[in-house]
Image 1: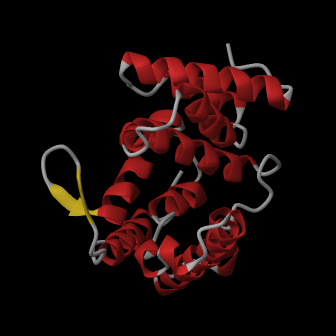
Image 2: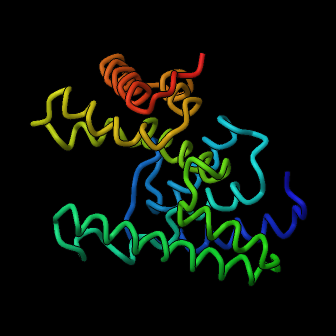
Image 3: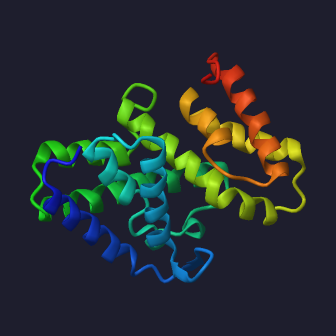
Length: 212
């Protein structure tokens, strides 16, 4: 699904070189790595598992989904729902602009540059299959790699609260993505039960049935 493997490899390497500058470190279980570099690698790995035939545009977007995110920390916006929404909107444009600039430097034409930028802005979610695929992978990476730490970081939350939080994530995912959250990822039993409840709730709320 990659038209020019050398150009694609160059773009991936440039994305990784940028994210390797992240001053925030996170463990991959064996060593500590720049946080957004590790996240990008996890996005690619999950995409390969969930949709190995994904388009080149999705592959590129997955690798730069959080590019230079550390430059706009959450604390730079008010700790309110409105502040969170403004922060998220700013990030979408931030990542899309950086990703587009790198792709142009690597020789991609404007058609591909715009496709990837549109994906990074999450445009036409639920209508564009590629945007939906990227959103599914984002949700699956969160469940697989970040949910456990999120739960540990909020010891006062009960199960109902976590189900509600996950429901908001799963509501943006496709039926196939929600199904993969219970079959493709590996979780401790107690978290697996919470994820299963949240996927059922999201499926019911969306009017869609979980994939068989």
